[in-house]
Image (cartoon, rainbow, N blue to C red; front, side, top):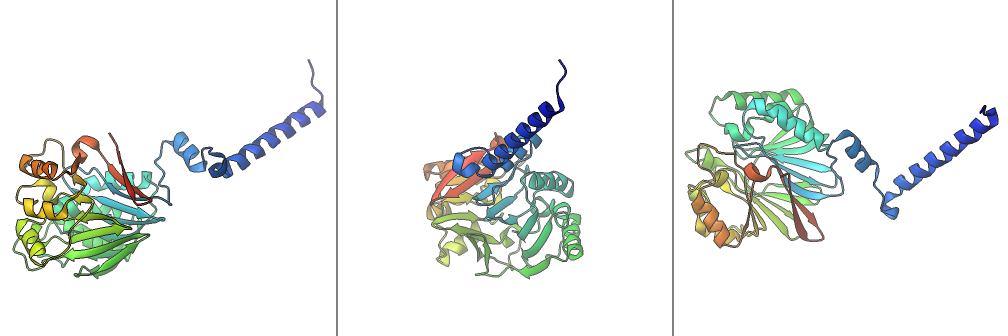
Length: 304
């Protein structure tokens, strides 16, 4: 049956009205509890969208290494970059899939390859404003050289890590708790950080060993926390019982590679943390581990 021109005009008008109505409903999705544009884009494209009003700490699965993303109110910080420069491409892809377009601050615990390895691929590819770093080491590893070159090329402003240094990332306050620049080995030169949001505290210890832990306790530094990043991937040369009991975490995270040759995390450490009442999370078994903070409470999400 042949349709008149007026019929098609009316049909077009009806479609336009329906489309406008859908746009209005989605735009006011918070009121009507409908999916917003970011959810729709995520469903269609498969990309992970970071909600800028969320406050969270994400332990990114980088195998046998460390990488921690802190996000709050659209501000982002990264502590360490995982292992080896070739992994940096995967880390960069992960950060982009989370919707990270700018790193307001990057921090490095120390210059070992499993903490700085992926940095050269991230710095510059994602706008990076500031870097807070320990003193330059005398090592000549290519990952360290590549990192410092990337910082220079990207014109990132670099500041030295000092005791008491405070970095604000949205509602997070990140403080340098300890840093022994005169330590004899690189692990004990790790910068120890505490991130606090409201009454919730996250303790990041890099690869610091038991001697550093003893010094921290001797100096009566408060390490009480809710979430504890196990030092040195759960090595028994770190994570002493005295230190863990002083920290008294509700959650403990091991950033480790599957079937790693070091035997991390060691059973002695997991036993100490379990006996202390901490819930154990491992990147080798759970992938990315995200601690969301809302109304003074923590919820945990894992990739697997």
